[in-house]
Image 1 (cartoon, one colour):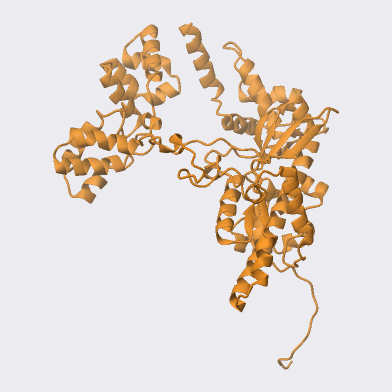
Image 2: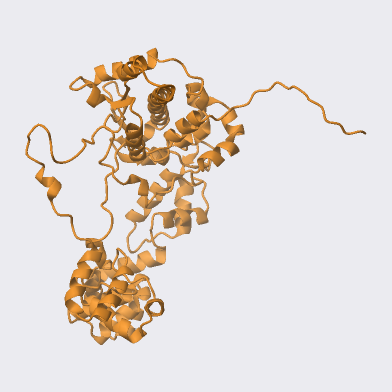
Length: 520
């Protein structure tokens, strides 16, 4: 068979991910803090954008919103701008690989199979007080003659690093010791522990280890008590020495902290050579110490989570769902300025710049409106499907996945995944991340309606909270009680749920209850 080159024409359909559509999709997964920062950047570089509160002055928000809607209606349609049909397109799944490469994110359901993971660090929740609608510009130098805001000049709270350096300047007059002290202070983390080995510091500074140990000994006498320790035992020992309570029995107790964590009190009594009463006093004294002495100074300020959606009970027995207006960006396209620039005599480069800025501004306002509608639509469907949770509590939480929500509102699963990422809902039962309502299902023993993994965790916690010293439930006993409640679950699953709740084993719980009973 001869090989030859020839030209052929084929007709086909494909989804082209334009930069506008890529950015609109990325806006969906922004938290309100990230969105506020993005809006600030756009306001700085796009002269066609302005805030509603700046443009409308003292106009009510409803009138300002009407002006925004009017700008949406009068603007020309753009094929590159996102439409609601784009979120429901099945081709988003087929083009998933290309989109993941562009955004650096995963399209699929990133939830844990056993339910949403609690995020602990959440770095994206910083600066929660700043929003595109609440930022008021510079602090001082108002043109209306008002007095400056004195709160803006209040001194900042000193950090742990600064606090230690102030004490180091007084405790180490020798320049070499002060230089070693600076290196040691830099190696102390926010909790107050030295996280770098002495040998590494010695090699880096070219100084003998004994001299570094000597300077470290001085730093360990600084305030707060326990600073500069290399582990928990040393931290507690430093605090006990300052209180003159580091006797041989207490030293033996501190050296055996793993036994104390496991509540091996008979072994500790034998090692410390004390009776039950003395051991109880020593344990109580250990608990009064600070295991993280640096947390009073260091660390970034903790900002409260601002909800994106608010749910409250309606008069007809249903639920009223609305977006939090405090976190919604309020932007206008300055059509007047655009028309004024268009009528003036400017060169082609300036006209092209103005046209591009106007197109970007129109796209951004429409994308933000579509983002708000999508969040509200997904939240409304979540409330509808989890109505029993809002009415009765967590024990009535139903199993739910992304596909159920996506099918109900006619959108793609990837869109629902982005909408529920870093979004929070304020409800009469507390503040919850939208991912909280998506949990795995656990089959019923009789083959009936499945149970939510989160509700099963709640039932396990209730069982353990109700137990007493004479009836501590093992994992097997919990399995039997759950199966009696028509929940088909394995023992290893119960152990995994118990550990996720940070509940110790039945042996450790029994020892703790016995110790508390003896103390009483």
